[in-house]
Length: 544
Image 1 (cartoon, rainbow, N blue to C red):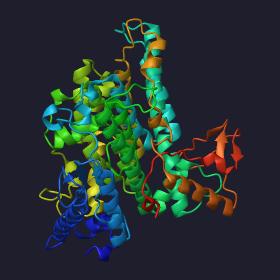
Image 2 (cartoon, helix red, strand yellow):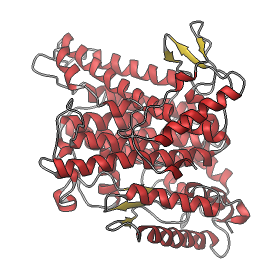
Image 3 (spheres, one colour):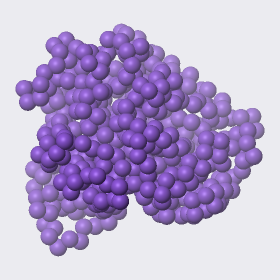
Image 4 (cartoon, rainbow, N blue to C red):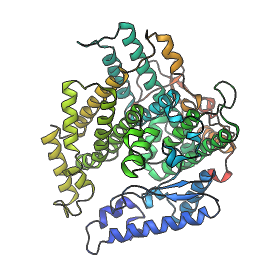
């Protein structure tokens, strides 16, 4: 059956769901059995490692597996991807909608994480370093699915909202300024984390897929390859994901063996630093949460039931909220050719967004402005668990929507959105979503306290970020990555001039799609503009 649709799981769902004999259910059962058997064969060479899977496993869902235990799961997931790629000629994310992850952030309770790096000594997830790192990682998900100018405008609106004095405001002007600056710092760090992801992914794609067109930015190049050859992007990301996971697991072992070391003394070993390395790895993983808070809230609390809301912090729910907004934006982008489908596909994340928002609003003890509160109520109704959109997303199985065509389902989703939210197009829906997110972020950053006086100097020390989160450094030595960088340079030197855009020494932040028409732009044709810093030893087969 899969061969008849080009070994593409998305095409299989379109062709087989709802057909006589339930062929999609049979294909789903085959997928689970095949993936489990392959992983089990790989894990026989990795002592102590096991597999686990959470979430729904119906005919419309994906099937993701996490490898836990042992200390070499990065090698196991890389071996799985290599064997699968050699057998099918494509990535498992394309053929089976299956992604394999290495267990990274354990549950935040001693009952389920006894002896883990996260609970060695004091719980790491309670530290301020941990929380600020993870909030930045969650904001990176939003940045990834927003245009550069849209992101900049959003940051400005949030900062202006934090600075604005309200009728019952007891904050001093200095305090409001400090909070607004803190918000800008958080969003700026998220931009740096996203830029690092793009800078490291682009040369890998260029070496494997081909040179970019002249004056094409890293961001635009990565997106253009994704549109033309999604499998190539998944392969590159899977490879980089394994590299980053290895670095994080090496640091985990060092931390457990030698204990913590303070920042600024060579190898910085701490729970916050390990969490930063895992978050950086998650950016490369397919369909993954970047932050610990989203994993705690959705995976461990809502799906697995291992923890409850009392086990989580205010920051955890902020992280989860940010990621649900980002994943909603992801589906709006992914399905933009079919607006109705984009709406009902994104409803799952919008529902989770409302759940996280309820918790964080309760924790901070403040209320949204009336207009934003009304919008939040509308979004809850729009994406209700037993509502029309989530039933449409599930394929209509067992509901009044069973057997409907894709076009009929899209029409229902658009009409549902028009009646509840007053929107019938993706741009207007997107604006309302970001309007709500903006109100929540203004409330969140207005909660920040840098001290009794709120002096700007205190927030600067508080918001110092680990270099690994916002630069291209990996924490090890990698000849493979340097090989990719040289291959990309060789392709450019052998092809017509393919310069990088620069403004005042910085990479030109171009919206997707589009060209940079800024008169300050200058062209730089030096191969040194794509220097790749890498220090971690990895298997040579990664580059094959």
